[in-house]
Image 1: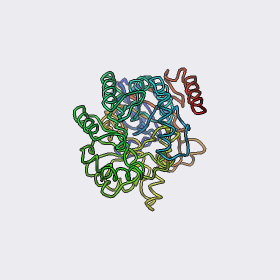
Image 2: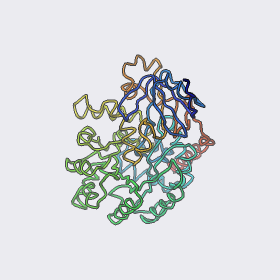
Image 3: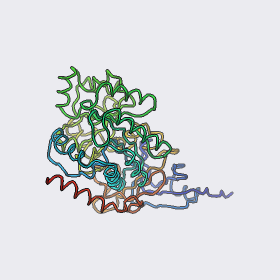
Image 4: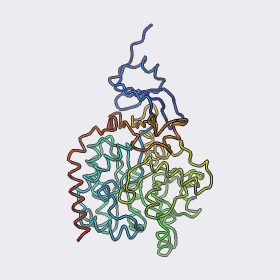
Length: 444
């Protein structure tokens, strides 16, 4: 008896598939996709017999992985890439970045900068990012044009910027943007108080209430530098994390960014509360902020994802670089070469990030029922040969230049290393315009 093949939208056949959940690498399997979702994962021969696809993609020398998730960035700051290098955090912020933002911040700046970030991230296999910046309405427009998935921050500070006048104004404008994008399937929002040193207790209390009412994650810089801890101890008599715990912010909805300096009690707070950490190794090193004790965090069961931070402090929005650096730093600091193996680092860059954002039901692994957010990495080039372990190669050999295809919710966004979106139209001229404006200001 002959069974009629089921008609589907897309069949992706790959030499290897790293599912992440479960933690397996399948060889010569295919992923069947229909209406943007994964409906089956099975051996290639069986897939060809069972399904008739409108489109079939064969990846003969590739590993197919979940789309990468950038757990922390300031996307629009791509326009400030390399603007003020080789400076410590507070000097970098107060003397260069904040003045540049005061002079040039606008919805157009955020729209153009976010488009640049989306183009870079997609070409590097990133399908979802968590952002913390101003004018989220403009950022959402850019993200939608590129077809990415994003959690946009309702950024909050106490002091005025061109975007908002005070903490309540930041929150109200962010909530209005969220309301306008409620029905978009790929764009969500999170509450993004900048840091304990720029946000008051009263504002944190309002943010906590909103988080509970609207079921939104809280995305906040914390314990980035030793100076931050010293200042907090002087002002409040407690570390920033102790202060946030006392206010009730730590918990499953809390994403602490950086966490480079911690007492054992702070790590216990993170672990006991079920909080997550966005580890940004390159930015932390470049700003000489410190190195997060990720091996210890994982030992305690803390959920750790990976972020790039903004291109102004990292210079690249490259999660392949972050995966490799995170693994090497953890091994070097702990003195244990077995910590953070390739499969765990890939999980950090995918499912752990999704879990932190409350999106693990939707993305982060190649699992039946989830959205088809996928990235294909070619391992057939001379510089990636021989290949004994494709997962090891993914972290320690391959780079974003090896990404050949990217899909978000089943839609191809990168095809043979070429962006398939109209979002990059006029982008080159927009970047040149902003570079000229920033250079003129710098010379003034």
